[in-house]
Image 1 (cartoon, one colour):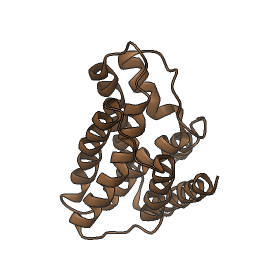
Image 2: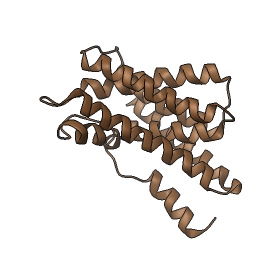
Image 3: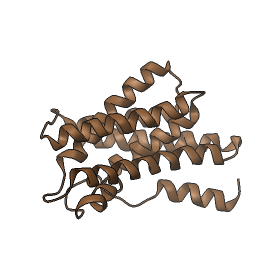
Image 4: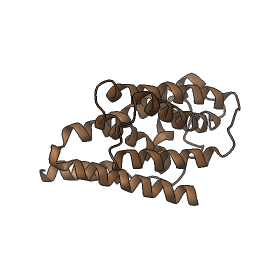
Length: 189
């Protein structure tokens, strides 16, 4: 692996972020776009989906990120309507732990099971985004922002796995383990 590839990979996983997302990111599209980047929990989970998708074969490579986006949008709609699951933050932390473990262990469950798990995690993330819709913001613009950035984070995770040489697979698994540890910490906090 070249120095440039190593630096790019490390930079992706070392993006500075606060531990939890919170409101106050502006309005509309910008608010929605900044929300997934402002919390380490959201950032890690969304990159992990891309990493995990790239470790899959066939339809799983596109089905997992697409499932996440659709379910996250549904969760956002529920959040916009004021619906909140009990233990929502714990669900988000658990998603970071589970997705990190899936990447670290390069798990390849049946596609239907992977999609159900991915959808459940995405529902929690979307609901959190929707509940934090800034006052006076357009829900449509806000949703477009968080969906667009989430898709970009999925693509970044996917690209890292596909871009790195096969010999760098242990780095991807190490990144998954780091995400799982962060998820465990967030779950315990």
